[in-house]
Length: 232
Image (cartoon, rainbow, N blue to C red; front, side, top):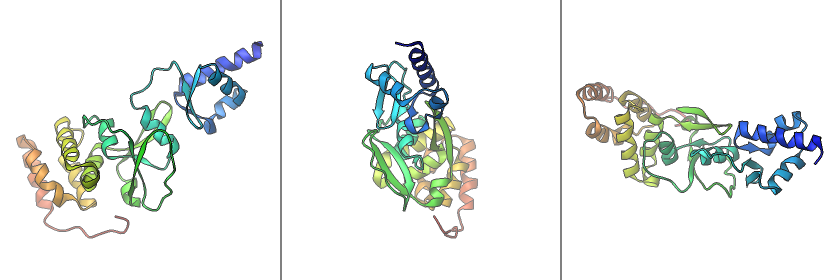
């Protein structure tokens, strides 16, 4: 093995360690370091690098992030947002371990065919797809995930798909851990017209006096019906 080849291999390994998951289309850093595609292919043949799926790689001996499937899904569906049970799992608001990553895409958007990882798609309006999104860096990939309160509200909106029991679990854990507040839930639920469904469950879940007081204050706001907005 020539010194140049050895240098390229070590450079590639170091970059893979820094990034975690690497997409071939994003290998500008490797090209800038004068590491060619053949070097990556050689590392795959030798077992040093694993090809997760077409165009997606990681070091074989790397310690996997338990959230890796979210990054893998996001790499193939960059315009999608991790949602529903998967977002609850990310925020530690459920004990469910979904067999597929739930991804929200635009109601008229293209649904890509992805062999791995397993993905379940659900279609959102433009507004629902944009509100309450936070980006998290997972193994070098920026992954958009709905924040806890928006996730819980979406679970009630799509309760017929995922099950009311999961939506209720998310609500209980969100309030218990204070990752979601009654105020946040009210705001998202009113915006997406699901407060009338959620209200009795929030009332039953709220336990301490401070939350009861806040809930009553929120309930008093709900006497008027919000006007529908385009894109809801």
